[in-house]
Length: 265
Length: 278
Image (cartoon, rainbow over all chains, first blue to last red):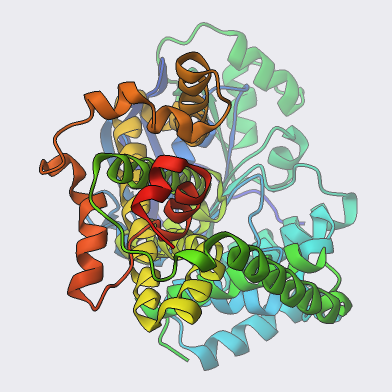
């Protein structure tokens, strides 16, 4: 199992910043994201948790380039994602809670198409697709159309698509929703493997045990603002519940009125 | 094989998806039904040609006169055909821009959004044109067989109507997007598409019932009131309809946009048929 990162204050100074979000704001009928600051370091597994409607998905959609923020800046691996979205997207992957794969394509065709979107030429794309299909145990179905696939298999194909261009930053919105235990385990292992290999993962989840067991750092978001952030131990300390589960800590944090963000030191 | 991230490559992807969707629709997902479906399509096409022969064969040599009754009939038919194409195109635009979840995947990639939407718009235009051409084909073919190859030019006119309908659908959808925002555009566009498709037909039917007690849609178009209040035949209003007979002269008596339905109108209506002897 992946062990949590050491004390953030030590490692942060040495790690490159994979994602820096400053003063991010987005308003629909009401403010969805409100002056959000967020920093994710290279090689880090960062999990965003928060109640429904807290602004997690909106934040990630802005980072992925699917929504234009009303204010603020997004920097991915030193690239201003708002000024140069193409360069930022080249090193980023996005996987939503409803994985999109084409029913009428086979996993192999899908991966070739996704590789093409990232301008990978046919031969290397084919090799990469074969590698991922093997890795995710999809060989028996590699040349079947995806229309009859279970949710778990679809998620695997979508995950393979997210990895096909070897992204530095993977952004996932509720990737484990609706997956059976085996598929969820495989997805988690793949993500941890990416982090071990130096990649950066940022994901949202409602499954607090997942955040507890997998995350290097956890961000708690409520009403569009980051109200707490840190390792599991740091979050426990902030709430004074050192022996509590993340669930207790989370419920304590989100129950507090949102005033000033209490990010980790 | 074209290079990734080019227009041709994206178009190839759309074509592949479109073809597989169409085959699945036709065969209900069973590939072993392909032969049966092919035979059924041939039989249907043959039936449509027989039907078209019954309707328009007598009008292949018609000399369309530019009197008010004819122009009103042709214009009404043009508007009817075009409004149905517009409705279909709006439905397609809404589906392509707001219902296809692959936009998330594509728009998070470095591929140019402009290229993606250009290809998508072309696909919608292609689908609209194909539907229009396929529906008109039996009539045009019969007219061409009976009256000469100049009738084949109608394919171009029908294709142009499909393309213009797509352009109008895109403009309407973008206007809706600006007016009501992305969230509500999908729903409103679908309602507008349905209303546009039905409004003209229902309007004509209601007008016919109230004005002449007839349930024929074309009765209202050919009513005394309509003919008395129609603009002067030399006016620009009639340009699309009046160009059609003129086109015929210019291109060796070439056809007009809604030639088959307009001729159908002629067959069904005394006034119209006076202008289209045959």
